[in-house]
Image (cartoon, rainbow, N blue to C red):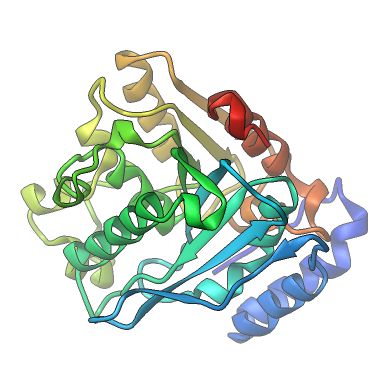
Length: 301
């Protein structure tokens, strides 16, 4: 994994250098712990983790603004190449959004090689269904649920809200969601190169199998509003993914917005949701504006 520094933001230089050292050294947990430690927010309650799938031992964390009632909800799927990552690493996402009035839920999902695509997509659908069923209990509104994801999590969230087959077992449809927010997601990545052994293992070697994983292939007129945020200096996920997906969505309806950030790298895009790296990208402002525009008025953050 790589990070590219933006020299326009000198105050963040020391933290960004630490991020590079940690990531290259394999100490991802230390990096995320540092971000979370500097991002703690007063007025945000974090109840104990909730089991939403006892069979597979999957839990979710809920970040709730104090006195939240009928608030918008974000279900956030983290990235990690579908092979690694932990919900606890992304506390800075939950703390930040909850501090701005958004109930934020960060669920587990199983990863490759434990499961292939069907496994982690089923986990994601179950998590969204749990949130929909318990929206009022966690201070949110069932008609104000946004699905959000970064990188591999962006692919998961986008596929949930383009291919209706994943939510259908729970009596839900993509149009039941208030919107989708994609941060550097993988939306259009066929053909998968022969060198990408893990991706071939989870998505398949043949074109028909790989097509099932491409959100761009399922675009219709049934999606909720979508916001796609993408750094132009992203060397992890080609920005062409977001451009292609946005064009496909915009051909079908008006409720799709693409924001391209010059000089912003793959991880800087999501790290900008943390307090110390806030000024590296306008991620938070664009996310909150989108939620504000598409939330029922009673729950506007």
